[in-house]
Structures are given as C-alpha cells and as structure tokens.
Length: 297
Image 1 (tube, rainbow, N blue to C red):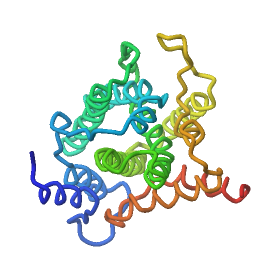
Image 2: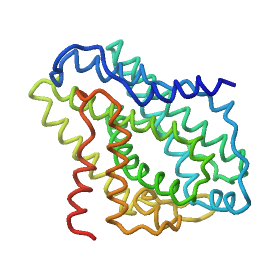
Image 3: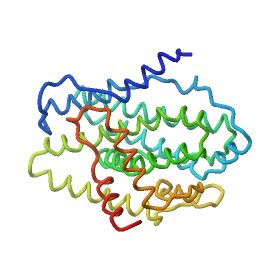
Image 4: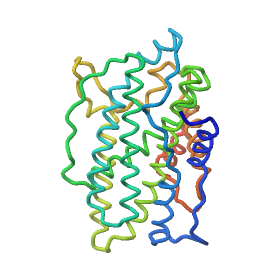
C-alpha cells in the first residue's frame, strides 16, 4: 500500500497543474494541443482499484448505498465509454494526442473496475452487462461520450458534495471515490479543449458537417435524458439515463432546484480552478444552468 504522503502528493498533483508552454496560447495551435494533452497525462493519479480498502459501513449506510438505483447504469456507462474512447483512439495518428486519448480510455476502464470492486465488496446485485457495440462512426462515439460526461459530471459534482455534507455518503466512502470524481473533471476539461482544437484543424468545407454532427449528438443526449430512450433491465425495471438530473430526489436529498444548481456551479468551478487558466473550461452546461437559475428560486 502507498504511504499517506504518497497518496496526498498524487492527489495534489492531479488537481493542480500549470503547463510549460510560454505566453498566450492560440486555440487550435500546436501549443494548445500540447497544453491540453500534457494536462491529462501529467495529472494522472496512479491509484490501483485492486488495492482500494473499501470502508466498513454501518447497516444504515450500507442499506442506503446498496439501494441506490444507479449501479447498473454506472457500470454500463463506463463500459460503453471505454469502448467508444478506444475505438476513436485507433483512428488518431498524432502521437501525443493518441497517448492522451489512450490515457483517457484507460481511466474510463479503471472507473469500471472501481465500481465493480465496490459492488463486489458491498454485495450489490447487478443485472448482466449487455454486449457493448463498437460504434460504426468512431468520431460519433467519442463525441457522445465527451458531451455526455460534460452533462453528467456537472450534476454529479453537486450531488456528490451534497451527499458528503449531509452524511448520506459516509466520509470514508467519499474519500475513496474522490479521485474518480476529479478524474471526470480532467476528462471534460480535456474534451472541451479537444473540441475547440479539432474545429480549427478541419478544412472550412468540413466544418458545417462537424457542427451538424455535434447538433445530432446533443439531440440524441437530450432524447436519452428526458426518458424517451429508457429501456428494461433483466428484472423488467426501468433503467433511466437521467439520474444525474433527478438523483437528489431519488436519494432523498432535500434540495430545491435552485440550490442544486448553485451547488453544481460552485463545485464545477472548484474542480476546474487548479488547472492552467489558459485551458478552455466546459461552458455550455454551466451556461444553461445559470440561465435556468434565473427563473427558479
């Protein structure tokens, strides 16, 4: 087992990073690409899921955790994300970008292992995993994964913090999952900068097609999250991709929508603050949250 000092150093390194590129960075430049790729590579936390010591929970806490209707969805989401990232990575020839994408896919796979180890440790029954389909369009799969994480992570940051403050998640379990949450922040930071960089790489005549694809991805994700694309699990129960939006109700957290949005916005800034200010931050979901916040108490 690594020492407490080693763990603390790795945790600090994954949250605080300043790139070596000098001066201002032009979006779409080689310097921009080096900046966001090095951010992901340099802030990797080398924890190993196999050696995580899962804390012993009280009967009440164990019941709360095991009764959450999210574990099937969470494991399957990471499984699909791993395949989609790996599929897109194989189409990339740039060595540095390919290395960063490989790291991204490896961390997605590690998240799935963490979840699998946790459900094993606490005796959570999961439905059999479906066969994950290789996306016919690798770029589509990568965009779906990236934008989906931008939505889910934004709300997950707030829900996670609320569950910590209220004690819904025991402090020991919060500490165990904290690196996973910060990794998601790194992933969406990397993705937001990749999108901005990639747009500038495309010749002018390909840009309209890419923007149309991005619009189709968003329509797909909206369709999924309003519940139209729900399916049935092996027990005949509804599986909902919308947990990050409705989770505060499902786990019984007494939060009004405005309070939840405020917490999500605060936590989103907190998790991004430690990285080089020249990196672009994901803006669409926070911008929409601020817009909605203007109309709710």
